[in-house]
Image (cartoon, rainbow, N blue to C red; front, side):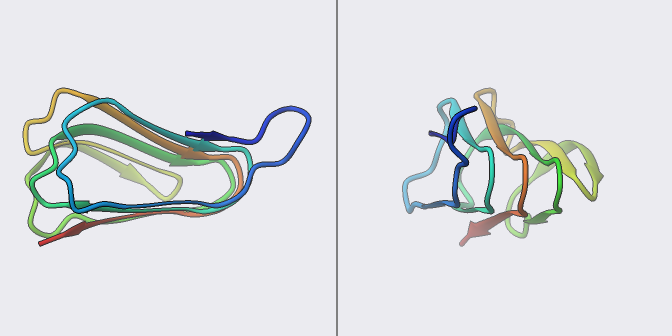
Length: 100
């Protein structure tokens, strides 16, 4: 999902699923927060970033490896996932939670 373009500002994106993800994922907006809730069984190589906000991740219940985190970004492989998951906003916060 890509929300926004050079001609129009994007808005918020929300993804809340009970289906474990193990395929490529792209969520990107030019303006607005991104809220993601995934099952703990998801397997992804996640990269999350916010140009003008924060990235907040609650990784309880998953096994992240290769973790690199700063206020505007978070990157880790979750549950030995190989599919790339990219979550990015230009303006707004990114929130990622894993549900038991």
